[in-house]
Amino acid sequence: MTNRLELSGVIAKDPKRSQSPAGVPHCHFVLEHRSYQREADLPRQVYCYINVVSSGKGLQVLTQDLAVGVHTKVAGFISYQTGRNGIGKLVLHADHIEIICSGD
Image (tube, one colour):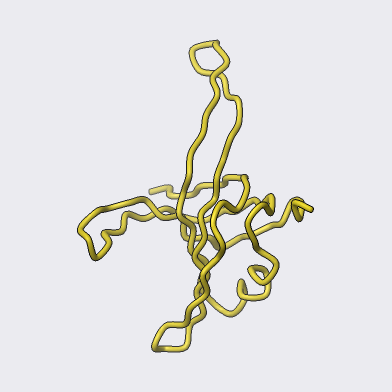
């Protein structure tokens, strides 16, 4: 089955970096996407926030320059996660991160 998502947008919340007990580095951030798409031959403004996590030493270098306002393209798979509060959400597990513009 296919599970692949590519999305561009702006970093909306400061990235939070952590390390698992096994020593795997993680970076969590929120991506805000806004664009115009066509649906039923009509223009439509689309907007979403999505939680993103990148894991592993290979992506650690790429996440060092992430900050609020940075235009970024991410790609990876999506997964459903339930938080400690019992509320579920979709999370994009990024295996590709590309900074489009630093936002300065």
